[in-house]
Image: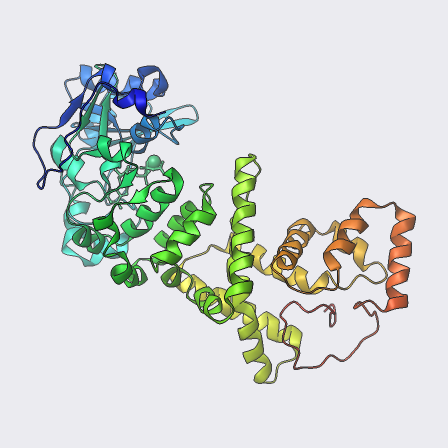
Length: 463
Ligand code: ATP
Ligand code: MG
């Protein structure tokens, strides 16, 4: 597939040790990017800026993805015009961002993001990453917008494959960092000294993994080498920024591979410390449950089905619950309150690392609560549960637990059948439960306070 892209172009095999000031220029016949594959609005923005006398290019992920014949997520433009100058050219433009100001040019639902060339100051692109900006010298400089040349702009980017500039007017690609050969060799390579670039912005370690997983690339060996040692730096990243990154990591359609890479590079533990502990203590169950959840997520994305971060997070954290439930029980709490406390504590602890918003933590709790309720099917309970808006997520979660080897006494199958059969069969199924007293006794039953499973097969009370 990449043959055509490189057929008439020879790349030097040796890498330049230092940044060059002349870019490699690929003419329209030397690459496969086509003007027509760029969003018309992005082309329009570039043309308008160029006509006004500025330099302007499509840049970053869109050029990379088009070279790989993947559909770009969005189209970013880099320009020599300042944000004010950009805004002056378009009626539908708005300046956004406090620390680093960008212009959003609106075309109906499409937004073209236009950034002024800037020089690298070590920090990152996260707009709201204000902690760092507020406390570090480099942050202050960035907030003041240190603009730069086109080459500065290329050098401050993270990976060579993300630093390609495409001019839709001349159809040429400018490559200051050997990004095109790295695309050919399927390598994620940091621009500059890897250790320094990770220290400047540790999130780049996660980005390296994200692109490697998403594009099926390797992380080039010098870029990979310092990651394990520097992984703990992720603990200093503001929790809000990490939440955004974690969503991108796990919702890009390659979550399973991403997880393996995160483990391989010791990047998982700083993100999910409690789960990492569970993985150590109970590798088979924890690993299977998480991998299965990620495989399901990837499959849903492939089929164009919606995925909810809450379900994924519920799965990622679930294996860390039993140890905490046990602690609470040892403090003397009965099973249900112990589970509630443990869930609350675990989520609070996780949020200190990754700021999961309330709109997701509530459904996580509901999915977990559902695990306590699904075994209790007596009387009208089963029908009430079916009507619960969280039933589907709870039921899917039950199947997930079973697929990881959790013993539930056939509960998943029971619920599958219950959903399929007619009303009178349902009544029979409920009656049969009472006969067997199938883990669903309606009577108030004292349960052993030493029971260890967070999602027990029998239930406790409904209150
Ligand atoms: P995707 O297709 O996943 O959006 P992308 O390459 O467009 O990938 P973005 O996060 O949208 O990634 O960032 C846009 C561009 O900004 C990148 O291609 C890269 O050049 C630059 N960039 C983003 N984050 C950083 C960072 N932390 N450090 C340096 N450059 C960055
Ligand atoms: Mg992007």
